[in-house]
Amino acid sequence: MKNKLKTTIDYILIGVIGFLPIALIFQIVIYVERFLKDFVLLVHGKYENPLVTIVLFAAAVALLAYFGRLLKHDRAHLLYYLESLIQRIPVIGSIYRVTRKLLRLFLTTEESPVREVVYVEYPKDGMWVPAYVTNRIGDCYILYVPTSPNPTSGFTVMVHASKVIKSNLNIEEVSSFVISVGVDYAKPGDVETLYK
Image (cartoon, rainbow, N blue to C red; front, side, top):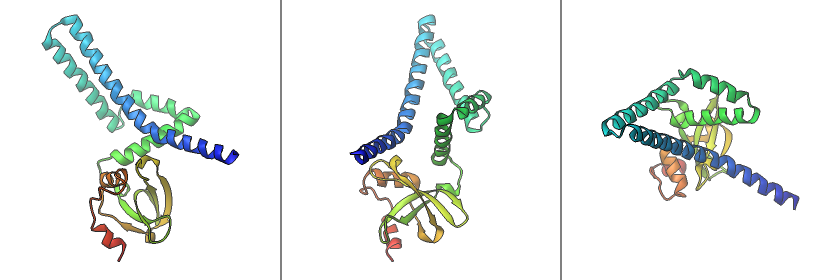
């Protein structure tokens, strides 16, 4: 009974951690939509002039874009102080740092080894799974292996470079493959490479 309860609690915690990034994105989208809607209604209610409303709406969108540009280049000083405050909070600081690294990992536009996708034999020889290369330490690959149908509920493994085979898939194609439970496989030619 105790093991079942522990297993259930583990599943709940893993589910919460897997759901948090999705909930965070939805909250941000809803907040920005409400902010812009309230802003337009406030301005339009005061001026009742469509031209003023359009100009102020465009200014608000431009301000958000400018703020996003500052964030992308780490030049937003207010955010810097807010981040340093968040990072001092014990549990929340750790979650924030990991979430930020993950977002940079998947949303970065520059080419880096972290953008690689490989195949690794897991859980045993002869069974291949696609994995994201999240880090390299010498000849050791640190891989994130997404699981179906929710790629955010995967696991991390460390393997030697000789145990991986490079894939022609990109991150979006692997995510689509995992979410579709293998139905959407963009590069079927990779199978020949795996089973030579």
